[in-house]
Amino acid sequence: MATEACITKEPKGLGFFERYLTVWVLLCIAGGILLGKVAPQVARSLDGMALVVDGAPVVSIPIAVCLFFMMYPIMVKIDFGEVLKAGRSLKPVTLTLVVNWAIKPFTMYGISLLFLGVVFRQFIGPDAVDLVKMPLGLDLPVGSVYGAGTVVLHEGLKMLEVPLWRSYLAGCILLGIAPCTAMVLVWGYLARGNDGHTLVMVAINSLAMLVLYGVLGGFLLGVGRLPVPWQALLLSIAVYVALPLVAGYASRRWIIAAKGEAWFREKFLHLLTPVTIVALLLTLVLLFSFKGEVILGNPLTILWIAVPLFLQTVLIFAVTYAAARRLGFTYRDAAPSAMIGASNHFEVAIATAVMLFGLSSGAALATVVGVLIEVPVMLMLVGICKRTTHWFGSEE
Image 1 (cartoon, rainbow, N blue to C red):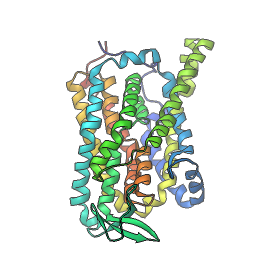
Image 2: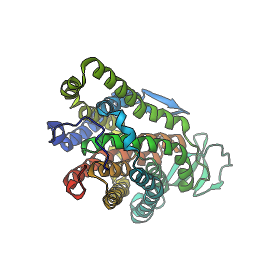
Image 3: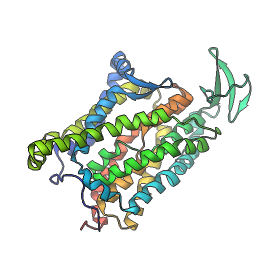
């Protein structure tokens, strides 16, 4: 039997914000970049407000506040008594794990290697190099060769000089092994998916990341051993997922107990309708004000990196969506299953790139490009989902 909805259902049809969301997104991206250019000191001050782990900014406090208000309206709608029922179906769980951990990291590696290392290599510069941090615990003399890099002395510090395209490849790999655990709740919500099912997938992916992120990262990066950012992962998941989850659960119970379920559905939820979208747009302004100077300074580089990331996103979405249809999923389970595979946890990828390679590295830039294309591409995929609901059987 198909899983029942785990959220309070809303009237069908798009609201004002959702109907023109692509327009608002583009305006906010432009506004954020403009803010970073016109008032860089404001952007730097906001960007500096962060929780730091091992010298790397892991959680941006302004972004965390925006994400809380983005997630809370979704979390408070979920009937947590029904979430366990959503987790009893093994097919969606199995599909998510297989796509995110057995397929996605390797297709990201292959597509990025093809485009960055072959197709676009001449444009990037076959002899262009990047200076990255020495791997943790490694102390080699200047001139030593380590993998594809050479140890050099830069401003009194030992650095590893590597081909620039390989540095971009490393950033793409870090994105490919970080499936989305927060924003996917927004994409599933906009696609009218089953939020209870999405929440179960988020929990499973969060646990899987703690085990597999370092293992797959070390293997694909080819550094022998990748330091696992346990603190960064735990802190990120706690702030971006657990905090709004607990707040939503507690406030839902309190409001229904105090005011009744009818008031909760008809009054309270109505007030929250635009909050998620507004918070998403504010998040975009902040993100692109932080990174606007980098994006404007590297327009063609952004394009070279964006192409493989875009192709990877569309490929994984198509594979998961087709598999969900083949396995007999309902639309409300198929849409979030495809979304969680296609999107990336760019906060963790950026933090890891900074910790491993440095803030000014090509790897860090590649993860920023992941932010740049994430929202427009995922909104495109949300639109595809909405236009293909008839491909799937109806829920009983």
